[in-house]
Length: 470
Picture 1 (tube, rainbow, N blue to C red):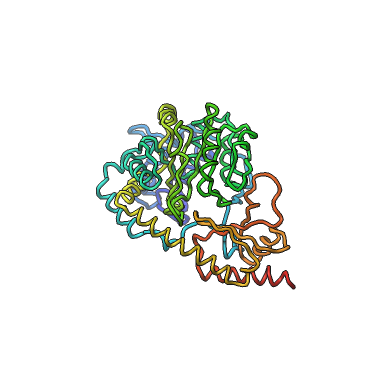
Picture 2: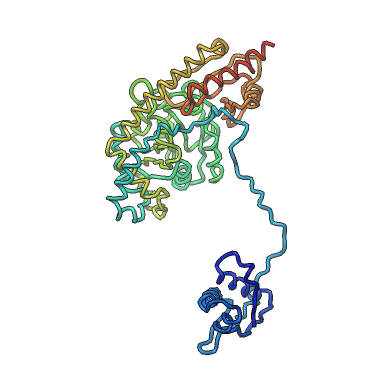
């Protein structure tokens, strides 16, 4: 008769019995074809209920460790020929997951959003209404390009805000621009050379490289990249941020835009990827017309995201394809599932259609304009003011600052890091070529507060300015 020490059980009793019998079968203690005790006999011998034994036997039957013959009982199955015994090894769970740097107290490279600025109450209200009114739609699989209600809302926003007349079916919704970059490489083909701006968005280079794309690094002048650079690289695709380049802040003038469009029209198969990542936050004047709106030959793919305007954790981005590429997408790639949940898509669509998105953008534009001015004024009025140069730009959520010092940029960055400040320079975004000895620093101010700015300026003054004089 089978007996076990039930005092060792630390969970449901039937699971303990199941595990004990399973281990005895695998170890060979219970042989193939051996009959197990009846449920009643097993229960009576061990002073437990028949239901407990029934549950343990049922689990063993369902996994194939034992089988039953009607009116005869339960028997051990012949599983030894199927048993795989893994070689003994010292298993290590030392996984190098990236974590926040504990040494960093003030992160001037952080381009996130202050949670106080997210419209939580409105978003929650809209979300509840969507769940109440869209139950059937929420349970349907989203079309490949995204739910039409959201694409229509985006099309209306682009027309009113960017002057872009697009059909909702030209819009493809994705979970972040990284996903859309991958879709573009499949859509255009992986045999093309992509030109990326230098300095530029280093993550973009990594994504293209992982997708097997050959990249060329296009140097920039004060107006952005040039057609001559694109020709030098023999590029087929130019990935650019013309309205507010990251990290330099350059806004490409109209004459250069037409020059780049002319380059794209010289040959079939050439395209421009227009990354308009933070166009909502232009503080002065009207928004600059997009490449897409002045393109008459279907050469521009327009990409934008809600990461800056709402939150990086709202993983919704979109691209607008020329008509012929939209048709190609649906002909060849419509089997892709939209990676954004219907809950988020319908909530964002309702948020936009009810006017909340426009109100939020207007409020945030004013907030960031004041924030930017306050930080620049604090720098200029501080002791650091006479030792630094600030480059202003009317767009985006960062500006450039140079510390006029004989100390090389990398050494200053290291000194600040040792005092809890993380800061990046333009050189950190150079994709090729030598870094500059005395470079501009990138000041991301979207999450900065006046209190933090004061403390950061004091540390820079004490460690770099005063320390250098001594």
